[in-house]
Length: 453
Image 1 (cartoon, one colour):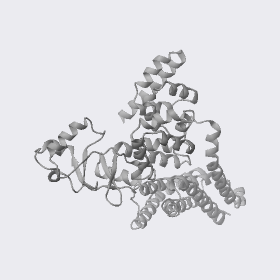
Image 2 (tube, helix red, strand yellow):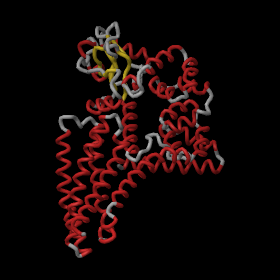
Image 3 (cartoon, helix red, strand yellow):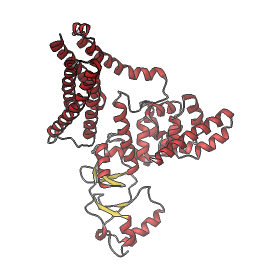
Image 4 (cartoon, one colour):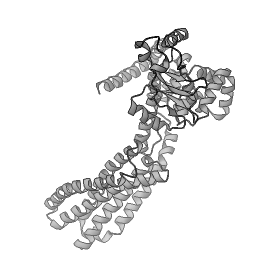
């Protein structure tokens, strides 16, 4: 927590210092400050500035690190910056990136420019890039890099060490060398730690880890992230359906997947795109959000329609009008707690056919326990406030009913939406709010009509 706070404070200090430098007109100072940062920090800085200052900062970024900066930006801001770049600049950026990052960058380009950039690359880079681009972006093949260092099982460790010295350098995040046969079939991995501590006269076959399973190229990126988490991996080989080595995935790419999924989950709950730019122009931002406001308006009218059917009750029993929002509000909160847990469980693969009923039963029991507690509290407050035992009993029963419906809906709605291919994080909260509002109002006003009139 302290490290996160320090990072935020550092970011705020960078923004203030750069703003001061730009205002004073000392661009040389600002340029030095910017290019002393890591590309990811520059990207974060750009996303933290209004449009005019972004343009000024981007002009000061060294072109050598420009590609790395673009890769770390959200889609909206990246597209805004690259639309003003020439094809030659785009080619320079693509060539300066690792193949997996280069593939991500090329896929973000306008379709009219992609072919131009690909044909401008040297043949070796283009072939490697096209091999990655042939896979879906959200698959293991789309995540992988082609920089894997391979060795044969029959050679000695001494030969491998001399081979590495001859290479001069190894790719970043290399913790294993990948063992393949003459036809490039994956056989296993050779950890660098084992290479260093074992007798150089041993063969790779004697030392290698034959139990290290490769990742299929068609595995989804979310499943890859779970695999890295469960196995504490730094890198992992990727193979095709014939066990031919294609490349490797490294932890830095997996962290990007985890971050994107987290952003998606948080923003989707509010009906926002996971690439929503905080400093985007007002008109496109309003257009994106308008649809969810419209949907919410429809649900609000549905709840109002329910209330309108109890106009007589509201006219005769003013107490009901004062208290009716309590039931709907409590149901909404309880339902949001359940649906958030279930959506998280679905994302982590923790919810299956075998345990759905258990989860539903557990959430209903939780709602009964909480419902009993808070129904008694609300009933006591209502009785003391209005000196009416009847209204206290009615609101307590209505609250119990709504909490049970809220818990059940919080489990069932995401499961139904997932079954029909709809993202529960986007649509779930809207449907849940509608149900808890309508059920809460219907239960409270209906009981009041029956017993108080």
